[in-house]
View 1 (tube, rainbow, N blue to C red):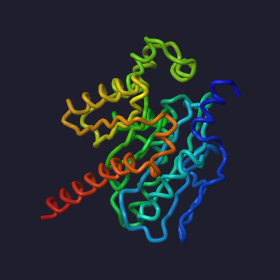
View 2: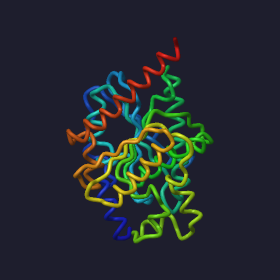
View 3: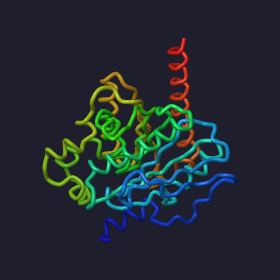
Length: 287
C-alpha cells in the first residue's frame, strides 16, 4: 500500500472490526449480498425493537480506493447512538479502485440502496424511509445519486428521504481537478474533463433533489467552498440544502457522529424535521 493510501486507511479507522460493541439485544446481519462481487455486500445493524425511521444508510470513504464497511470509525459511534433509539443502521461496502471507478462505485451504492428499499417494503414501510449518510469519498458517491436520481432509478432506486454529505471536497470535480489537488484525485478522476463532468455532482444536478445536509470541517476551506456552492445550486432548483460547518477534523467528523454531542444533535434535528414533514405530507395526501 502506498504512503498516501496508508494514511487514508489510518484516518478512516483501518479495516479492523474490533471495538464495535452492540447494545444489549441488538444484532447484525453481515455481508448481505446486493451483487455478485465479494465487495458488493452490506451490513445491517438491527436494534432490539426497531421503532424509529428513517433507516440510516452509511457510505464510508477511503479515497475511492480503500475502506471497510465495518471499520470502527465508520460505524462504531453511529451504531452505539442510533440503535438504542430504535433506528436500524446499514453500512454499505462497494468495489474500489482500480476495479471500479467512482461512477461505478456510485452505482454499487444505488444497488445497495435498492435492496434496502425492497426490504423496507417487505416489512410494511415506505421505500422513502431511508437516509443516505456519506463521508469523504463516500459523500461524493451519495452526492452523485442525490444530484441525478433518475440515473439511480436505473438500478431500481426509488426516491429516498434525504442525504447527509460529510466533508466532501469533490462536489465540483471540474474545479477540483483544474486546481491544485492530491494524487488520489488523479487516480480517481484521470485527466479527461468529460469524465470530470460525469463524476461531478454539481454538474450532474438534475431537477430538485431530496433535502440535503452538508457537513464540513471549518478547517478545510475547499470542502466548505464546495458545500456552499452545491447547497446554493440545490436551493436554486427549489430544493432544501443546509450547510453545517464544524470545528472538527475530517477524521473526527467521521468517527464523531454519534459521539460528539453538539454535532450529533444537529444531524438528529435535521432527520427529525424531515420525518415530521414526510408524515405531514402523507397525512394530507390521504385526506
